[in-house]
Amino acid sequence: MLSSPALSIFVTLEGIEGTGKSTQATRLAKRLRAEGYDCLLTREPGGTAIGREIRQVILSPKNHRMCAETELGLYFSDRAQHLREVVWPALEARRIVVSDRFTDSTLAYQGHGRGLPLRLVRSLDRIMTGEFRPTVTLLLDLTVQEGLLRARRRNRESAAHGREGRFEEEELAFHQRVRKGYAQLAKKDPDRYVTVSATGTIKEVTEALWLALKRTGKLPRAK
Image 1 (cartoon, rainbow, N blue to C red):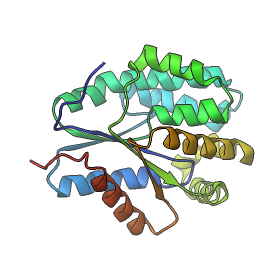
Image 2: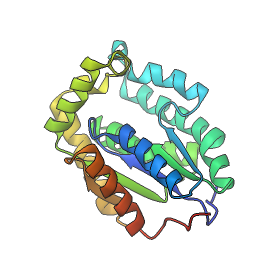
Image 3: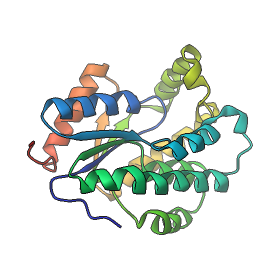
Image 4: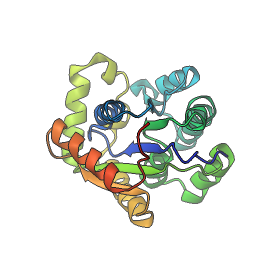
């Protein structure tokens, strides 16, 4: 397991469907670069070539019969590759890494959402990642109803997103469990988690995330 060098930090964005994580991760990385930071933007699943193939399997609506245990194994397989090929080398090079999702997504979705034992999820986490944790986790929060409305509208308007819409097809109760799971994770780890409302405009949420990251005091001085 890698310990991040003092001049690098690992920032993750988390949240239920429709909170704008991908958009905001891109905008946060752009802001960091504008401020003089060497920043790498990545995502899970799909941050590597192998991960992109795994992503197609996990998120395709045609795989609606996938069992929770298979889903769990695929996510951690993607993560193991992602850490070793992308995240850890970038941190060793003293870069800031911004990732759209990480292990907290698995705890929230496969643990709280699917109902798999959290001890099982954490056991795989120890094996596959050495329990590696982000420096800061920015949790975008939104009501389940509004999040699903946004996500399903996006999928209707974009063929690419529609091909990755398996989770948006889940029942409302599943997404409510996921949101509750995120809230519990944030409560248990307040030193790492910062919750930011995703109800504003894209620009407003971007600014709120930037201020939240700065207030953590974990952002190193730019080169």
